[in-house]
Structure formats: structure tokens, C-alpha cells
Image 1: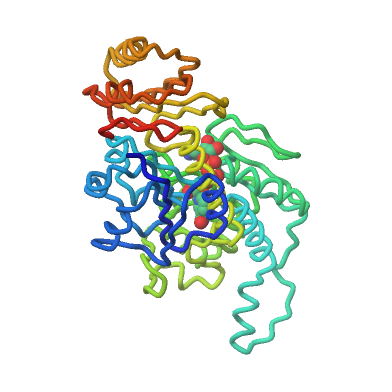
Image 2 (image 1 turned 90 degrees about the vertical axis):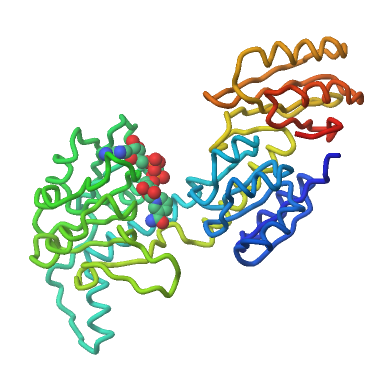
Length: 411
Ligand code: NAI
């Protein structure tokens, strides 16, 4: 039997998700925190889809115990908390929201550039300590200063637009050719950018090629008194080299939101050589943490879950072949079939449809080396024989239809 769709939302996901899911026909159940153990299993028992943030872990055992789970929504950026290949092996789609907090990071970056050039953080710290320092020495406007953006993707390009609106001159470097926005100019090498910028801000992904991208040598190349901002990932900037450059005055200031070793929970102790540097603004990985970003994430992920439930679309799924599907015409039914990617599956399905005298109006297919996802739009039918036949195919991982007709034994 196909269940009525039920969405389990954990970890206080923003309430905007509820409206989107209810409109798609889901009943919504919420829990304040993360769940684990027996409690998580009991809650998953009722769920067609589950929404989590970073603290709920979904392992292969969960996917094995809850085969009725058709999708997981990670209402955050990362998906490390989910066993993605186990989900794929069960035909369970996993979605996330990689770019909804872009604007929040971009705004914070530009705000930090202003604070660094005006020495606002140091002046404020002195005043908290009871010292009135009204000197203008080493305080500058951002207008006319050169901002060097390393990585001109979603965040870097927005920083570019915001910085130009303050009157900054923008240069950027990216390993991929990117269209410059506004008056920004591309630089062919990182070294050229480092030598030119009054403030360097890093917006590259964390991977083997960006680990230690800004180390001792690169910092030495920067102008004396320049600023460095890292709101990307902790592995990208060598914090020991940065602390030395701040202490000896080669760099004028820094803003750092991400660290090589970050505490796992709020309230945990934090240690870093940068703690001793008065000219460093340190923030606890909050670049993307705004209510606006949470709201955008909730809507984006809920819409992906709704589209998957209603139309079978796996666009932007992180673990299944991506298929973006049009809305189904009235009077049609969509067969959604995830199967092992081996030869002959489509042929068998076509034969079964022909035997049941069901005509295919549209067919979509995408595959990765392990898994294929095929979608067949057909005229509505009520006979279970065809679906039983497809479910019984040894390659079948998951079979469902948009109209809620199910084979007698579901897989
Ligand atoms: P993106 O993927 O849109 O852009 C990254 C850009 O960097 C791409 O254009 C890519 O071609 C370029 N790139 C890659 N390697 C490079 C290299 N070696 N040199 C120069 N350019 C290189 O990524 P997005 O969304 O702009 O994110 C940027 C960073 O911000 C990521 O590290 C992400 O994890 C981090 N982030 C941090 C947040 C926080 O809370 N502080 C929140 C969101 C993202």
C-alpha cells in the first residue's frame, strides 16, 4: 500500500518549510532537536520524507530499517551526516541547499572589510577596556581601496557587487574563466592579485588544491598593512603564518570565520594562535547564519522534496541521477523507477508495458555508473499487473507512481 505522504522535520527547521510541504499534500510532524537511537527509528517509521540539519545522522542501517523513506532533505549546506551511497542503493533521494546563504556571507565579508579599514574592532575593544582613543591614524575609507577576491563563484561575485557599491576597486582571480560583474577585473594569477590588493578575501571551496592556498609565501607577497579575510574554510589559510604576519605588522588586520579545528558545539572552548592578535576579528563560523538564510534554505529544500514527491524530479539531488521533469498532464500517470545500471532493463520494461497494452507518452532517463533513474509518462491505468512485473525485476531498486498506485509488493 502507498502511504499518505508524511514529512518529519527535525532540528527546528524554519517554519516556512511547512507551507510548501502541506501544499504538496504532506502532513508535517516536527521535533525541536536532533533525534537518535530508538527515538529516531520510531519517528522515521511514519515518515515518507525526513528533513534534518547537521546533527541528525542517517546511516545505512536507517535506510535498511525504513525502506518507505523516499527522500531526505538536508536543510543546510553539507550532507556528511547522511550515508549518501546507502541512500542511493535504496533509491532514496537526498537534497540540500548549497547556496541559500550566499548573500549572508557576502554582506558579512564587506562589513568586515569596512571594520578592518576603520579599525572598528580594535577601537571598540579599547573602549570596552575603558580607553578613549580618538586617533585617525591607520583608519581609512574603503572608497578607492582595492579588494582582491580569490574565487569568483556564488559568494565572491556578490562580494564584488557590494564592494563596488561602496566605491571599492575590485580585482579577482579564479581558476575558471568568470564573467566580471560591474567594473571588476580578472587577474591571471593569485600572485598578481596578492601583490595588488589592499584587502584579500578568499571564497574558494575546500579541496586538495585549495588546502594551504594562502600560506607564508602568499602572505609575504601581500602589501605591507594589507588585510586578509577568510570566510570560506579553515584549511585554506595557514593560521600560524597569519598570526605571525599580524604580530610583526606585515598585515594590518584580518577577519576569520572558519578555522582548521572548530569546536563541535556552542559553549565549547576555542583555541587558535589568532586569539592573541588584537587586529583579528574572529567569528564562530557564522558567515551564513542569518534568519534570512534559514528561511531561504527551508523554502528551497522543501520545494525540492515537494517536486520529487509530486513529479519525481531529482534536479539537484546529491546522490541520484538528476532528472528535471515537466508537470504531468491531466489523465496521465508517471512511473518512477530507480534501478541498477545494467543492460536490458529498459527493454524489459518496454516489453511489460506492451504486454499490458499501455502506451508510453514520454520517457526520461539519467544514469550514473551504478544507478539509473527512468521515468515513464503513460495514460492512467488501475491494473496492478504491470507494476508487479516491474517490481519483480531483479534490477529494481525502487518503484513508485505519482498517482499513488503501488505494486502489490513494494520495493
Ligand atoms: P562556489 O563553488 O560558488 O565558488 C567557488 C569559486 O572558487 C569557483 O568559481 C571556483 O572556480 C573557484 N576556485 C576553485 N578553486 C580555486 C583556486 N584554487 N583559486 C581560485 N579560484 C578557485 O562556492 P561559494 O558558494 O561561493 O562558496 C565559497 C566558499 O565559502 C566555500 O568554501 C564554502 O564552503 C564557503 N562558505 C562559508 C560559509 C560560512 O558560514 N562562513 C557559508 C557558505 C559558504
